[in-house]
Figure 1 (cartoon, rainbow, N blue to C red):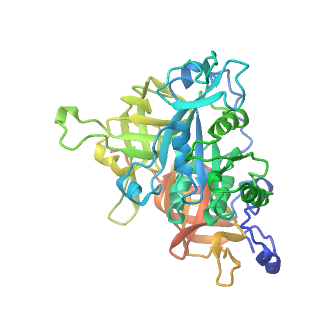
Figure 2: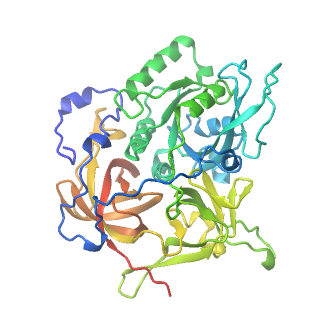
Length: 500
């Protein structure tokens, strides 16, 4: 039985050959934010009757002065391992997202990759679709001439896109969920030379459905390795797989990422089917950190040392050079009694970058590098991943315990039992340890109380978040973390940060 009380017939379930994700339908199962547990913190409750004022007129994210320098939309690449996610990003942006030595040796993505691309369209009406679309690296000028032979038109800049390249390996599911926190849309890669769906194809599709992501383009990759009849049969299996899911009406484009075949059709679809989401420029900035770096080379002179860099995406608000910022939860320690303590990190923005472009201000959308005066050792090797960045004193509360209303999937995606049936998701149990993804934060959580579809979780590391935030739940099964459901935060116990 799922956590929201649905009954099902195990015989019917075992007959299903395809690993469908149609159990995930947050819209149909949405419930009011109400905790079934008594020990809520009254200070953290929110009044749903308070309406936010309508947005005043603001800069359009499609304005040329913005998109010439900064990406304004994040597009994730998702799908099974070795289905061509990084290759598609390289075909569109020209950037190799696999950069680390252990990634290159094993030829798989391990950390989140990132790349920016500018998408242009020729302004000559005689230039046919989709060949009139072309993509370049983010340092390309605004109006280059059309490269089609005999065409005298000029390319006009339509989009500046950030790609979030997610790993497809099953043990890296938490990394993929961190990337999903900043995605506005997704490219779902399905390799034509393997049966559909593969385990992580269905698991990733369920994950983005949990994150309320409904702008999806499906790419049937590796068609250069298939005959026409096999490609048609594979196309039908994709249609069967996505029927009834959030990707049910998504376009399916056959491509060969390695040969760059049909990439112009992908660009056409990116421009015409994925709108730039509305952004709020007026409220306090809130940035999710998904990467962090120490940019200093070994042996650098003391006067040349630079502060740490936080990379991520701004969800709302605008960051400007010189802003005083705060990073929460910051440095987490325990006192003599074992109680958690948080010390937020305070600094000032000294640089803003979108790949090679220096910015004076950064708007929501796109991946941004924020240069600070923070000790670089606090930023090296992604140590700030899962933190949030904003103006000093303007960030949400830090929670050490949260209360959630949860919904479990009926079946485990990508896991089959010995007799070939899909494994069922067991109920949450008291004192069980699960993994919770809150934004880009991946943390362990112990179930301290449970009642119906509500639970109280004690977090291993505190998280800075808002009431009403959607979170993903994973359980350790056969030594791997597997997605088992999602939840909404309804209350929590806050942690007062120390600012000595």
